Image (cartoon, rainbow, N blue to C red):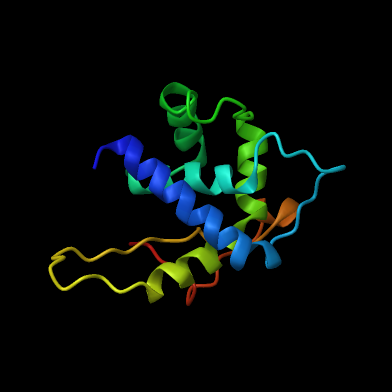
Length: 140
């Protein structure tokens, strides 16, 4: 399966789960209903970037601009993507919960692990002055 087929499969999986489960756990904070770039597209781009080994939203966004613009022609800017990924954090948790219930076939020798989202421990103004809880912090 080539990378485009994998991207489409990932997008369709996310669309199905978004309609069934995820949409009840995420809120849209937009003025009106602007569906030009959907939550499913944001989640697919983010997950695809993570699966390709990109660790930050800025690198994932740059990759999407450079290589995925034909698949996502209405890709929004970095700030909007970063905001949407943060707002969809509960949706990523639900997506990972679903993926963990999927049975890996007996002939598959790979183990799949995916970090759904780095958990923000402090928000807004506190993000710059807050201290990490040592029991929650992970340096690995």
